[in-house]
Length: 414
Image 1 (cartoon, rainbow, N blue to C red):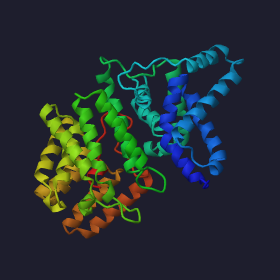
Image 2: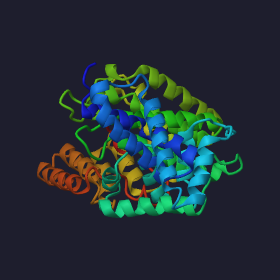
Image 3: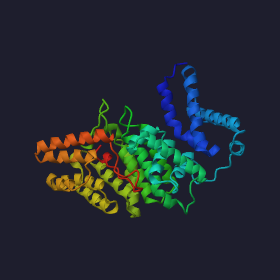
Image 4: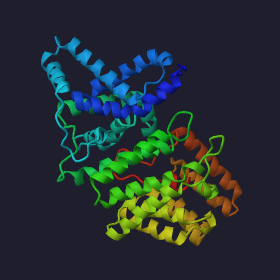
């Protein structure tokens, strides 16, 4: 039996973490117990798998082992917390039949994490932890807060779910629309963390991108007539289609204009464009749909020079009306540069208060270079490098804390 390195075991658990935790939350009704049990299973795997090899179904092994460990723990603690642990044991032994519209534990867990009793920022953080399997340190970097602060927020959020008896289920049809914005934001941000990872050796985490798209598909099945859900799925598919051409062989970033478009995934492009056309027929535009349409225009162009920038500018005008903000305005300025010239775009960029956002400096530097103002461009590039280092690939300002739908900015250029 070939040896299994610890790194591979870690990769398997990272991939299956969300599924295992979600199943165990359903079984035991306790998030902390579910997480601890999965961690116990990881410890057992580290001891056994190097000699026994990977089991035929790693996910099944993890869930079974974690469930058994959780039951053992509850039995040991029964004397101290008899009522709670006995109830959990009974529930584990007699799981009720599933009645929700979509039989997927991870989708249920997303709606639990996105309950309106929780602040919007912690909804995203908790879902990244429980569904995406990100560590507390990784989430803290994405939110630009100390790890101890994020750890405290996660503990309080799980405590609130427990104390408020927030149900682990997909909401009723009547409640779904009001919960939709937080859920779509969570799926988007899981994808964005995968597309431009906040930590680790790799710029891209394919597992998170895949998970976000899978969750997006499930949400689209649950709400097939909701245009913004369809728009989100189209957006993720169209951006994901570019991933094969996005990195150099050394792992460096290749900007959109420089990518080999023959390497783009045409199957994903066709699916994403078909969804965009479906959204257009519904004629209920929203931010995700417009962002998807912008990416559809990019995917239509056989070369960067063939890009229909006038159409993209019109779409940005519409997006700025529906979702006004400095980051949207910054992206619109990129289109303005292509249609009206770098001078007009620079005037717009200089009016934005985004000094701490590294892409602001990168775009401004490029505009200055195109105008022949090379000394100023060099200073802008330096400012961008400082902002990038300081904020660890800074995210869209306030997207994680304000509750507003985030705008995918980096992906428009890469």
